[in-house]
Length: 505
Image 1 (cartoon, rainbow, N blue to C red):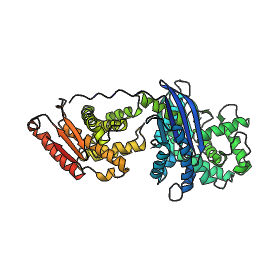
Image 2: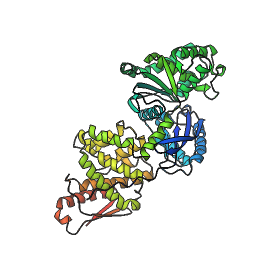
Image 3: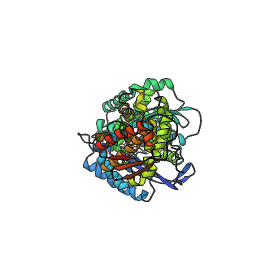
Image 4: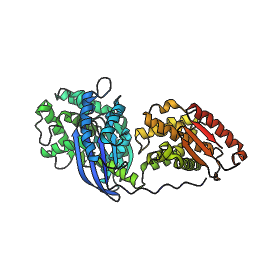
């Protein structure tokens, strides 16, 4: 079968948008594209304090949910009409932790009209660095980038546009404020307790980071920018945040004794309730890492999302590099992966409309699954589809949202032997239906190339109707290939147990 050429890329959208569903605030940025750059035309921000709405059972309570969804309905009006692929929406720490996050995400997607991706902490760190680095001079110095969010803190070491070491720690301005300053009181004892708790999070990385070193420290996002605003407005620092100015801020807060009495120039009323937690985290980080001075960056996660989105639009998708890196790291047979990918795309092109597989998302997911379907062989041939599914569920995969990674892992898990319907049942009904059909396409492509030979297959007609898939080969070709015929007969048995009917002639 001849190699299938990828379709030409669509015209890039003239307007793109990124929405960050943070633990403290929701942010939206809208931009006009100009080649591989963008110009911001609108920004929206609302402080929803999502993290503060997690109850004792680990679920988002009704009040926080409704407050957040009301914000997203307003955001949805701004991105209504933008095409699929022109909007990137991500959830961070709170949506990683909340037990009922999936229900919230379903409602959020209805409000916004676009998909919501929950990203891992390290993926969040990668995107933050991408945004920060694009806002700095392109020099060769090693940078330490820090971002204190509502529920997590990201620390990244990198050069130019390349993050080299990334960590996401379970501490944020909202969670730390709720834990140590819930009634608003600020005492020296409480502040020190909050700092020690933060240093416990930093303990596992501080020696490694200090040994690698850096030439500059950059801080991003709300907490750090608010602290910078206060220390400069108070006249304690001329530029950025110095260790001395941070110590003065700490003393002033303890002297005030309560968040309501923080009469600090540059501190907004909406930031005040979560300000102590952010200050405690920054103080602990300065102490643990020996930081003398930090300068602020106006660019962070939102801008990083836009640059990442532009990369996807201009065929520079970091996910492609991740797949290639994984194939290399786990010694995957790339030629076999390419053969299966081409065969799978040939099938998808023929039945895409009939089975609802005619989207770019499905095309990419199917290709990546084909390229990595044998990754589990690095562990063992026996049950290598299960090993592959496990690896792809748990590996750090830059560029992939958690949902994308789960879908990819499920396809690889299901590419041979018994088709595990229970794994697909973990998704929504509509997504499960699409994934099952995509997996059937992958399985047929794998079956066609079990001989692992490079010679082309003959033209094979593939049609689909309902749950029936029909393969039509040239006359007498199957008679001349009894082993493939036997493989197809076995595949028909597996697919029948999963509710599909495979016919071939």
